[in-house]
Structures are given as C-alpha cells and as structure tokens.
Length: 297
Image (cartoon, rainbow, N blue to C red):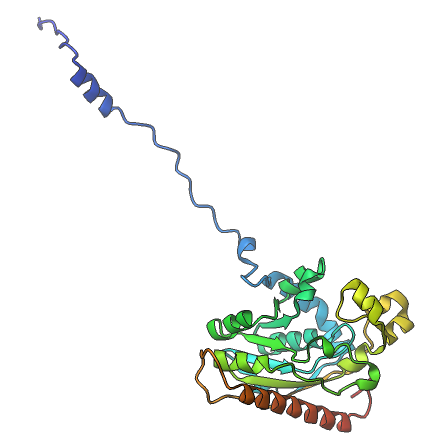
C-alpha cells in the first residue's frame, strides 16, 4: 500500500512561481483588413480615376460628335516624363480645357492635370468636381511637384481669365501671357513647353456683353451675356454651340538652363514667353485661314 502523499507547505515563493506558469489569455488576433480600393482612388491632388473614367464615357460623345475634335501633331506631346502644355483660352465657360485633357488622355493614355485659378476651387460642387477630374490650383509649387517630381503632363492657360473674358469681336486675339511665370516653372522643373493652338472654343460659347458691376457684386472674374443664353435661355449656361474643334500641337520648346535654380533671367523669361505667345498666335491665324466653316471645319 503506497504511503500517503503529504502536500508540501505552500510558501509565497511557490505561489508566485505557480502563478507565473499560468498562461495569460492572449488578445484576439486581428487579421489586417484588405485595403479598400475606394480609399486609394483619390490621389494627393484630389484626382479620382473612377470619376475620370466616368467622365470619359460621358464626354466621349460630346468630344467625338458635338465638337468633332481633330488633332494635328499629337505625337509631339512626350509619351513619358513631365511636360508643360500651354494653350490659348476661350469661351465664356471654357470648353477648351475638357477637350484638350480628354483628347490626350484617351488618345495617348496619359493623365493630364489642369491648372486653374483658385476661384474655381471655391465654387461649391464645381471645385470638387474639377479636382476629381484632374484640376489643380495654379501655384508654382504645385506645378513644380507635378512636373519635376512626378513627371506628369500639366496644362496651363497663360492668358488666365482674360482669355475667356474676351468678347466675340476680340476672338482669337491672344492676351498677354502674364509675367511669363509658366516659362520659369518649366525652367525650374527642367521640362519642355508644348504649345497648343485651339480653334473652335471661341465660337462654342461667345460672349456678347460683359457686365462688370455684376461681376464685382458676385466676386467673379467676369460676368458674360453669351449668345448661348439668348438661344437656349438658362440652359445656355451649360449648352455649347457645336463648333468644330481643331487643335494643332506645335514643336516643343526646350531651355538650355540648369533646372532647380533659385532665379532665372527675367529678360530671358519674358522673351521666351512672348515667343511662345507669338507662335500660338501665328498658328491660329494660319488655321483660321484654312477653315472653311465654323461648324464643319
């Protein structure tokens, strides 16, 4: 018969040791959730590829059948790397930016970011929609990052709001290209400038009269009365005339200066800016001389 077992006296040390052997409950393991693609759809500039794709599908019939856009020299736009696209600007509600951006993106497969005045970002709804489609506030730092650091195509209109504010009697007469800031940006970023001459936008929504008092009251760059408003009533604010678009891409302009400098020659900047403006102006005159009809090209 086995001798009876006697429990050993439990000391504080043995109690502590026994407790240390008890496995502590582990927190429940949480598997990392798959990344929701919707969270990464909008890039740092606000552009959404889903929105852009939807916009392409909606805008394609307008581009192809209403404006019947026709390009010349599209192969002059680089297939990779940064480039600053510079074009003339027109129509009371500009129609040229969507045509240029849609055409390059669908026919070349490269995204285009369009620089615009900060005014558009302040308009409720319009600012968000513009950003989702590749619109960026026109600021030198934004342009530099897109061009130099990210190697993107960036569209800018050096005439600014002075272009769309032109009356129909002033059509295709380019305004001054500001102080040449777009040239300095291209120099700093070390990218070419690609000029684009656009015919058709002036007739898509021509301004008949400007009302400065209303523009001041509403704090807008200009307030136009367009032929579209007279023809279509309130719908004329969104309906363009079916003017045929022709777009000519000119030879890229490069600069023999090192990128990333703090300062560049002001006289050189102004000279290059005026030279690009003159090249676009001459191309517009040539295209207008060849045009047989506003509606059929």
